[in-house]
Amino acid sequence: MFRVPTTVSAILLCFSVTVSAHTTGRVNGLVLDQTGAALPDVAIDLVVNLRELTTTTDDRGAYRFDVVPTGNAELTFRHLNFTVLRRSVHVASGVSVTADAVLTL
Image (cartoon, rainbow, N blue to C red; front, side):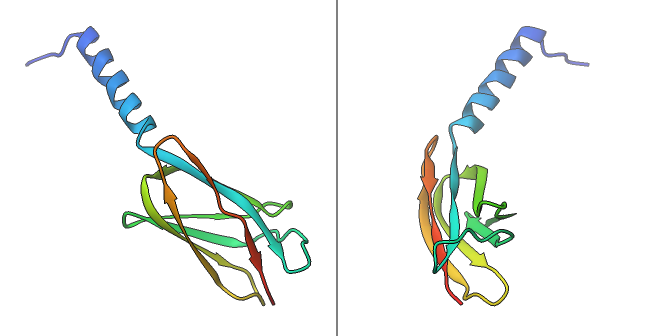
């Protein structure tokens, strides 16, 4: 049986972690209503490169996607009794994109 030396395995592991760390970005923001009040529990879908990520806003109306593949992405914001809002963003490697939203009744 062929065994890879420990040093080679460690180098390959470090390389794969470095590559993945530099091919993702972050998307975050605040979701408010038309009066400027925070909207908790807004469902947010982010689709990029055929991958779908989902989160919800917290009590302050804040949301965050931490490990987002690079490329053009579409955000969809949904909350009961509010209009659905779609936003396009471009996610770049190692960059944090802020995409705030205002939902209307």
